[in-house]
Length: 126
Image (cartoon, rainbow, N blue to C red; front, side):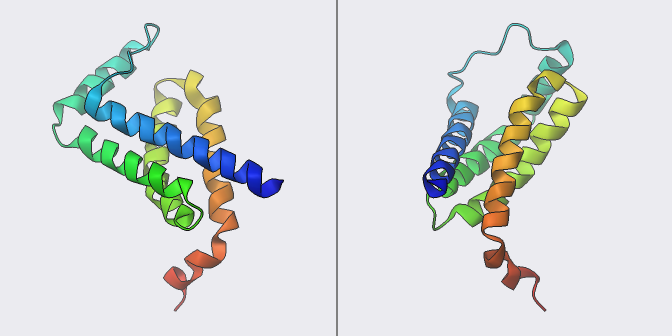
């Protein structure tokens, strides 16, 4: 049962990141009307840097795809971690109302990292 719940959480998280990454290219999700003004300014500034949003989009898509498969999930968690850190810092400083979903995503990614800890050991082994 634990494996099924874990798979569903990884699948949903992966699909969420894939969706967010695809939106960076196709802009099909509307901006929320109640978005803080500072967040709107930050988003516009990020879009002015022509290479930044496509890079984040590609990382989100690749990381999301990697999270879905059990074989590549450990790598997917590492790929998504910097993006999730940026999301966390943005929500802390600009839009604290988004923190609950960020904490859920962090918990899922940490669960993946803890579950795959032995796969990371060769990277830090002397």
